[in-house]
Length: 638
Ligand SMILES: [Zn+2]
Ligand SMILES: [Zn+2]
Image 1 (cartoon, helix red, strand yellow):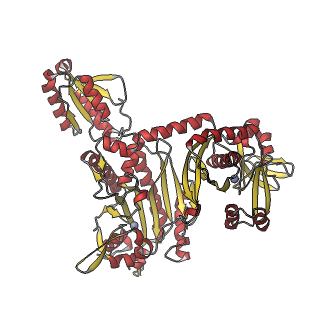
Image 2 (tube, protein in one colour):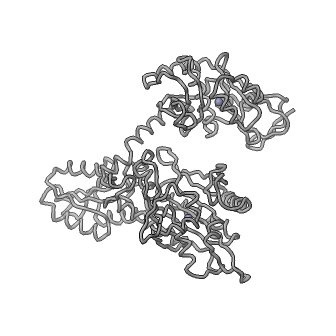
Image 3 (spheres, protein in one colour):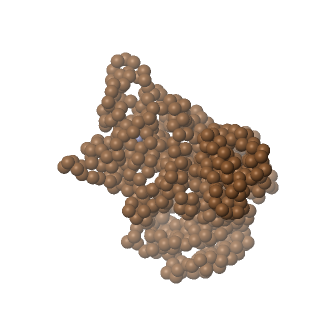
């Protein structure tokens, strides 16, 4: 008998060799139908896996992120079979999952065109309809290499596998592919799919190799989910911040400085509103603020380790026969400020923020509006503390971060912990201590996180914050990086309680990351319909005709006095044209005033995106607007 613990703590006994799929059936036919894989003692496996001994098990469905990934990956196999059946000379290379879908790299001389997508999809639908089981077969590495003789791509994949047991999956009779798995039980469980695009890709990203074709697809648990995804993509196109930024006159780029954003007056209002808010939150969490130079002696960058690890991304200059570098990070400047005076353990933790302008060279091909630029303002801070204070400080940063994201309406986030990369400075011991401190803080806050092995910064492990925008796209924003190396390199010290000099721990952290990029994300998240507190222009007064101009001026003066960002439209346009224009400019509130409003001291309020309008007294409008600004309310209705 196998003794099985379910996620809710229930313990079941089943006959040895019962599969995970059979167990799901035993629990309920609904679960069995939705099941795509199982997690046994935390490891994701096929539903055909037999259950033995004392284990914990969870049945995974397409609603589970990992379950969805299994569906997507399985769908890649179905697509591969379809492509191979249409073009039998196809050589399969590699087919992983990506955000929202999957791709398969194929070596095929005949180009696959968008016109072919339907044909591939039809073939896939046939394979799905046949409901062929995915069957796993295992063998040793040597046997696999023998079996794959002559297939340079798959042989290469096998040679890169870290396990000595190699598995193949066949779907039904014919088609078989080398794969680690796991897979859904049958081809009828791959969900609702669509081929999205095709692009060129070099084998191993190596331009000396043959150009392969990378076919992208997406799949979702149901047709509804797929349709919603396709609609989000359409919506994302409409919300492209490069288009909206130009249309609303927020920022621009010039050939005079590729990758350097020019922020226009309206863009600066958004920028400064964020800065004001950012400062108030940092004040609450007891940070100080500094500003350090953007050009500093090259020697400093040798000392910091940037020269050895980051030189390719840096800009350099020379004057007075001395070499200088333009800062790609603010840390060395922060260290120099720290060193200007003595420090005692009594003043720790010392939290020092800087809205630092940094320059990082990006290849011209990867730049993308405000998302990828060469110059940006980082909302940086360095915390100097004792090793005992690390955990509490990390917790503080996590709380501050959530408070800031919450104000913009980002409530859906996930966290990743990145560990030691191959290229790094500092001892293994130091890395372990730092990594443990980060994990302890996350556990203390009861936060789920994912571990990215080897993805840390060269000077320490890190926690990254990822948010999801309203189109369910994930963005990495904030980061917390522990650093035991730089303080030593810069000879930073503090006097401890026992009167000896010690090296402080340095925590680097950013919440929004790059201001430029964050504003780009906000534009797309809101579709440029900014909440009131961020709107460049908050209210516009519109007299119905010239006769009401004086009253409009009086209303405008009241709004201005109430510190609202406002204007008056005195043009000769008809009122409907004025309203349409203001809607186009994404004005949150439009105040229409005519003789009736003038007589009663009222304003007729139109709200962005809503049909109905409301007539209220100026003072009550003003009070309502002020409180929405203070509370950073996203909803404009009142
Ligand atoms: Zn596979
Ligand atoms: Zn730093």
